[in-house]
Length: 178
Image: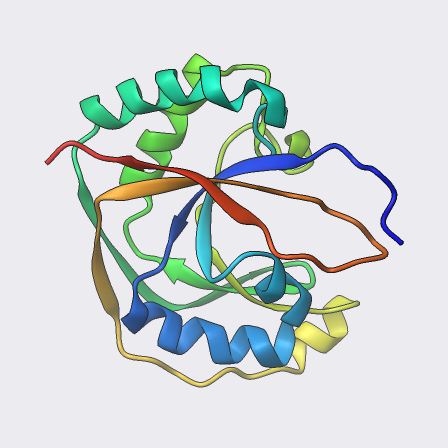
């Protein structure tokens, strides 16, 4: 039984089908719990405001979306953090620009609670490991560069429990200008 836990929230960019075709099979093999929680994505800001503040935050996010031009992203190759392998955005600056606009409006929310600093390192996690030795021994298949247009971001929410793996849901979709 799941104890009553506050809902966590975040802002993500979901991958289009051509990028999911590469990321999802890898996540099924190497990061299943993450895949069940949230489909392949690029995190913009997690955690975000408490769930009961999303209606008010949405107004600000819609204004940010209206002033932010849609942009293209290219995923090419892999990179890693300790215990993690991810698909690498070649041109992360537009994602960082969106993050900085959101961060300026909501300065008390740091990416990943500030565990990795207060700036964003955009990526698509495809593999998670208990230790870095496992990561170093894993070779993932090459893929052709994937370029796609980002025309929206999603506000998502759900529970993050060590006891249960539950999918997060979309609260709202915020279109970008252009």
